[in-house]
Length: 257
Image 1: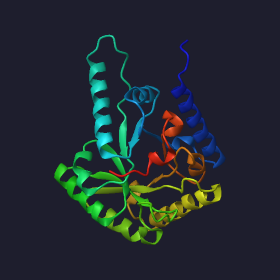
Image 2: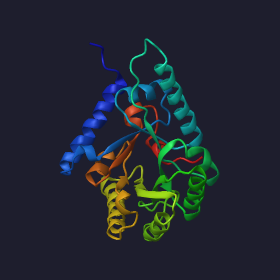
Image 3: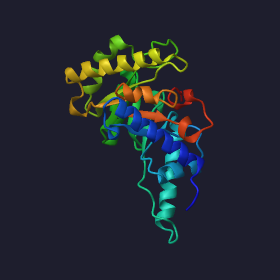
Image 4: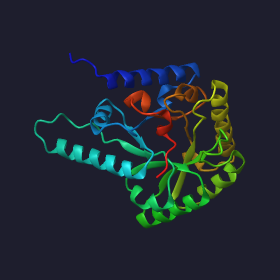
């Protein structure tokens, strides 16, 4: 029996911690999707993670997402036509999790299952227009600045419901949830406060039926705080360092193009 790799061990540990956090919160672990953030992972490491059952990958920069998605397609194609290759794993889906500039929207749309980082009406309008041209309804999340850090991207808590209504009304967008990042070096109580604020906004928007039945996701939690996030209701955690190593937690979500 082949020895498990370090990546496989780390991935197992993350999955076990997600499941344990869900159980503590009296939730079904299957409610939580693990998004493996590929920020500094090698192509080989990404392929290994996918072979180990990772179905969702996240990137914070458009150019890197395009490059990595192309590499995965090429790998799948080579496996398909190689007689000796092991059966290919199901192709992963990609999530755009970092700050998105309006001029980078068009090349991104064919590649992503969801954009987590809508933080302005102008960006939402740009994606809506690009979706119309591409004949695609785009799954999006609104990013909240729940930790109220002045340097951080995201919509202020008080403005969230109004912007959410605007996004949900756009014909080529499907608002599927909210995303946030807690402060990197904060204490547990402050991290949980940011997640709870986001959950409260989420529940208020659901009560108002903003986004309809598709509005059901909370994208919260990175390598340093994903267990807290699951306990506070997250349905998607964005984990890079704890799986791939050799990167800083800040790189997992807060990035600019």
